[in-house]
Image 1: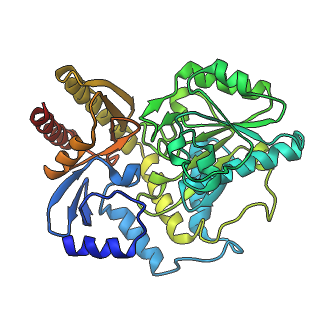
Image 2 (image 1 turned 90 degrees about the vertical axis):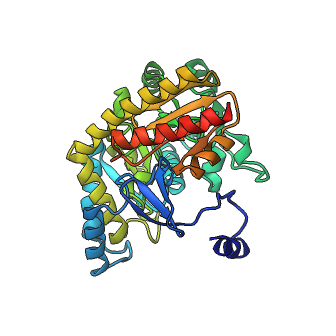
Image 3 (image 1 turned 45 degrees about the vertical axis):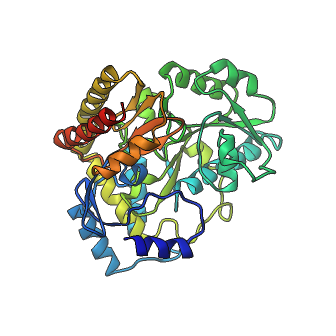
Length: 395
């Protein structure tokens, strides 16, 4: 393993602080390194591998599509893309879809659509987008500008103009940020990289009303919290608040890279041919994966499992909170949960890996729990047991 990692360090740019693991294969909710060591995976590719590993239907459908066609230009139609888009429209109760390659691209597409729509129908001065402090929207220039955390923007000045930040879960802060040039509000219903911080229900309802009253486009970034992660198909369904645009990715392809922008009919009119495009977005291979994920979620069994196991995981995490005084909070929805600690979590995560459990941090001293949506209560018990062993050793 060490020789392979050394080789990797010689050929890759130094952009990741990686753990010394070479992941070789996966099965169910477990992954194996190239030495054969087994790990229970509570990371799932950071909320990506929604169906776990070696899902029979996903493998079968992708293999079949590989034998037919992996890519064709968006100059033409392809059936998997149409079928996946139809499932997204039916599930979201929105109207139009654009497929991208990643979450950052989905956010970029959503921001472009909002500006195009506003300038086309509401006035050429309508260019400013309000985003939230502590948010994370991606690493491309537009998305990282929209991100309300300076640590991700360091060394990238000047950032793009037309972005204003306000306090999350603070309706007065939003009201004060709106001006005559505002065209849209962009937020995450649950801030993922910001420490697993959910929006308050009344806050989102008030945001929706403010957007309606001021003719603003409401964009939800559900790249991490969407596609069944919360126990609903989309996180906004937890809040009974429907946005005008939703950006998706991560779990949509269950490991295959795909993103999507979904919009209502009115706002979707902001785009016309030539306004936005992507070479690989919506190709038949990735859309086959998205189709399988959406079909599996629409059956209801997996969403029910997310609700059931999410409650169980929260219960076990609260037991940890009650036992260890340095665990100060448990928060999130479904299988997107976090525990906040008053001590650095890097050592906890590293020791859990040594004992066969993969975890990932979020924000400041928060451990994030985003396992595959098919996880069982027995596997949760296994993971919690490892965490308990590690915490006992640390104290």
